[in-house]
Image (cartoon, rainbow, N blue to C red; front, side, top):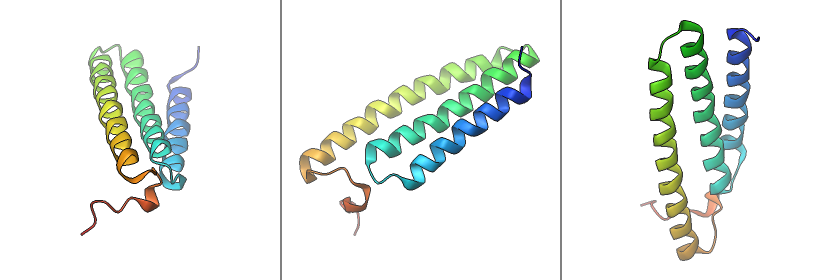
Length: 100
């Protein structure tokens, strides 16, 4: 059975991949997926610490994080669809709708 370090390394890799996706993607959906990967890395850490400390608080926080993630995806996709309908693009560089 893998130890705590294996889970922490896995979470760090998933977080790094998500951060790379957020920083390098120009597509709004790609940025949203990168954010999801980073939140899943947090979930891996919470579950690993809950498992190795025999504490249910980490699992409760994980369920809370998953519910926030689902809400964030729904709102994010709705915003992206609204922007696509108005601008006909979802490239982040072309989205200057809120700039003054």
